[in-house]
Amino acid sequence: MKMLKFVSLFAVVCILMACVAGTAFAAGSKTDPIEITPRDGLTITEKQATDSELTKQIAADLAKEKVEDCTTIYQWNISASEGKTLTFSYKLASNQRGYVYHYVDGAWKKVGKLNEAITFSSFSPVGVAIFETKSTTPSGGSPKTGENGLLMSLAIAAIAMGGAVVFFSKKKD
Image (cartoon, rainbow, N blue to C red; front, side, top):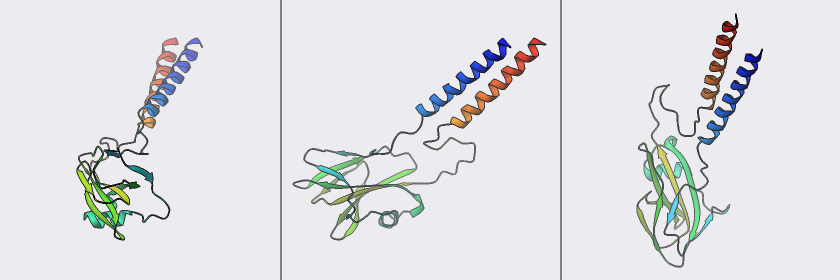
């Protein structure tokens, strides 16, 4: 009976460790992964309800990309007293492409790519779209970004606990 308590405690500790590790390695927040530089003299605010929206369809058409490959869109209002050269930085994976868009003269226009300097003569809504070529990795390949393997960790902990129970119960006999 003492051994069963020990194994149960061990199992609980393993499960707690798996939960902590799973949340520690989870994908980070996507609140503002785009870094806009230089920021001096800029006022950057969130998209307003009255702003023309950069949609996946508009972004794909302007970039000559597939709509279904558009994974993320960010949009801001940027203002400055004069035109500037800005860089919109983002760590792109090898299967990703990113473009910068500017709403000017009543329409969205593609003005450049992520991680390249782009000169603006005026500011208004500015957006970024990220496109990703879908992986053809067969099942069992590497997990997608944001998958933390928590269920796999719990399954391994349960198997280890079951094996320990069987081992110690056989040893008592």
